[in-house]
Length: 320
Image 1 (spheres, rainbow, N blue to C red):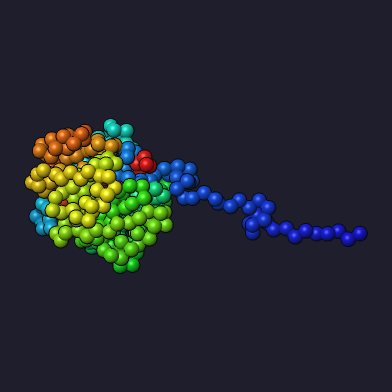
Image 2: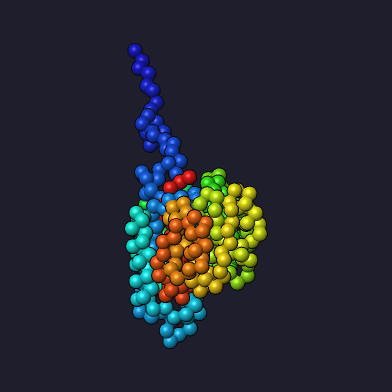
């Protein structure tokens, strides 16, 4: 009798026992990968990534402009203010993670974590800062994101430049992306390609000459309310917000926006924000709009050309 032998393949080659991976990356967050993700600017904030100031006096006896600072910064005082901000997040039930740099010396501008990545519903897009003063900071952000188990979907490459503060979710399917000093056309192309793969539409707007980031002229505080800097935010951006049901309220006092970083806040929940203290006219205006304002001192950090929004890398919000 001739025995028939059936060919067999091992599981390693797709035979019996092979288990195909059928989940999308977004479905693996909180399991294989750490919980993270964002598809709005206003939903309840759950997790942030920060880095504190270091050293003593930054810029004293030298040209602060060479470090992209507005004035010399007392890093010890700045560190106290940064710690107060972190405590405010913890007090609001928001988890705080810390960048743990390996480089020496640690660049002061590393405190501005919002610039170093942009969070999506499936993980982070790693930035590539436009200035040589900040070149390499993205390595420190990448290392920490990897340690935390957060997927990095793309690192902007080639001649592209991109900073996270130039991107903003308008709704769960739409991202506003700004071209200007910090984000160039090639960076936009690369970031747009990643977002398109997850079904998001990208709207590109240009920033005025002499401005830094989209974050500096637009903040979103609820599904139907945005706050903007008049004569800085592009008309096209305002029209796109309006078409999506947003009321766009324009800040009442430019002096407080310039000297007090009154627009440089973070939305911690719908119509709840953490903003720099010392901006009474703007705070009253926000409260008139139904926004609850929590404040922390930021006057020393503001000398470094940023405040709460710039300091805060968004790791996780509730998805809408």
